[in-house]
Length: 503
Ligand SMILES: [Zn+2]
Image 1 (cartoon, rainbow, N blue to C red):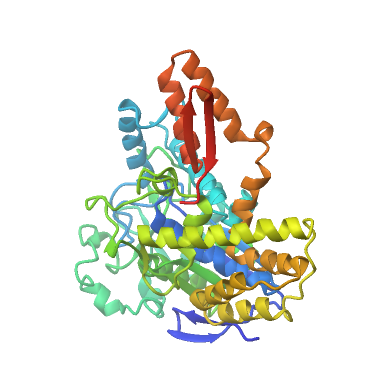
Image 2 (cartoon, rainbow, N blue to C red; image 1 turned 30 degrees about the horizontal axis):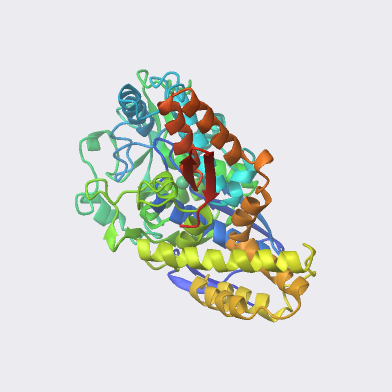
């Protein structure tokens, strides 16, 4: 069975094979931890997760790395030249406001003036969101989820190498810039040309610091800035690295290779971020290729419109799970399925109707799983993935540039008639779920039905205790936590109970 993927670099669907047989090394741009991740971020992260899980079910050993950007991502990075303010500094300011107005719980961030604490707060939030949505790479934190601030030495080594090889220089403002003219292929991934970029590329290049640079599209590698709170000593003065150099460094270091098999990200990262990563990595190694396949997920729309804070359709993962967004708490498995079920190269349209459909699928799959598990005593039959007709058809659909709609058609047909052999069917369900990750998220609920061991039960007890002490704000805080975990909460004179909701 051939695997074929669309490669942004060549604009073609071509046959995929890893450089080393049996092992795939892939890197995904992760979050900048200056805020809670929104559903659009997770659409891109879960696309990478789907890709990884497919390759694993197909039999590959996948090394998947997703970074955390905790320094150097500027507010104005369209031009990639280090203008604007570091997003972490902006986050620190906003968090301070939120703390004053009570939007951030007491004790969550002791000192919002400290960007390290802010980064830590939102990193933990990202890992929690990732865990709740079955983003597999976060279970390999910290090994495969590196933070930029842990790789400053390695970034400096790479910058020195780029200067030695004539790809970088110190501008008249003291900033170390990458010279795009030193790399003739600059623009290949995004379809830009150096000439078009010179005249400002439709206003996308800021010209205010042009005189310091050789070409308007030259981008920042190191910015000396004694006033920046997160700063490190360097041969170019105390300062901090650019966002792009972080990913070039972390990907090659953590994956232990100069050439990646696959690099993923959202389509908004193609230019300048990924274009710059290629220029840096190939500039430093002298290799023809940095990543053999570039795969990008398209934007997520919400009810047919681009998500924006102004339009009020901007939702964090937490907004959706807690029910703040739609009025009803959503089970993480439902949100996961909703975010993976449309093709990564099509605009995914996030709708309440879609969530309801996903909830139905999750319910059917879960009920089937519970029945099969009970019937076979929890002992599945070993499934030959390459031979079993259902698993094979599922894999074949995904091998065709991750055709998830076709794969879901296979799943729906199978749910409707899973066959008489419960142990065989349970084996099929577990195989399919290695990619879907639905049963994985719902079966832990049913295993946690034992109220004594259930976190939900202890939260219910805390609610009752707080109510007895007439501490209603504490009771409400516990209730909000439960809702955030996807529970429906009922309090009555007999006490409080919680039930997991699917949508
Ligand atoms: Zn990146």
